[in-house]
Image 1 (spheres, rainbow, N blue to C red):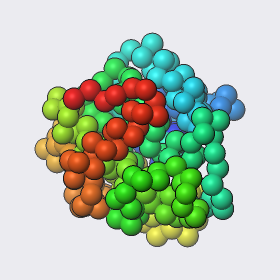
Image 2: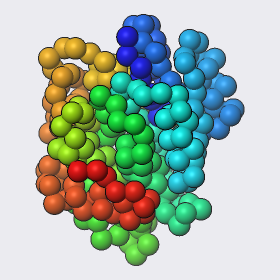
Image 3: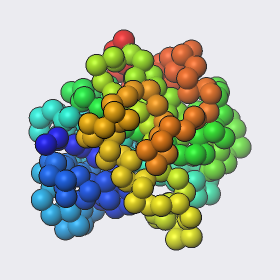
Length: 257
């Protein structure tokens, strides 16, 4: 039995992965951004060990989740599933002065990774849109560029797979991978999305707990349990280190080598 923590798991892919892991006999802790959504998650996933609460739109919310996660004991795997989509009509600035898509999709998994007790496995949710992300960190907060919600989302998904590869390189004792679930019918993807929703959740769960040889790897991007090469910038060590440095400057927490 493994202990698994899944962020952004009150619905969608995160909840499906949690339900699958519960059926397999694993101990699962979910995450929601509010008390109301936490209650909904408990009702949909009876048997969960707990639901940690914190809004990733703020650094304080991220740190609240870190504190609760560390207090509840170490996890064998953490699935960084939380995220917001591309249907954002204008730039939204958080209380910390950050662009919201970057804060939720990128800074939250960075801060949780660096401040939580390291698990044995890390899984980061990316998207096929990562291949359209910009390999530039000149303006990650969109303070100078004209706002483009799709591009901001694509950039964030490139940054997510880059985080997965950066920690795979730096932390040799942790298996760190990314998952592209495909275009699936979640609230973000919409009801007409053509890909297999269950396969997206299954790949997250498989990487978190499976002893299959295919899952016992690090530094890969997966689509339906098969390797899928992401944007080449994700494997660029200089780009990885630049992203880590940007996140460290915003949080005051540097990633350990």
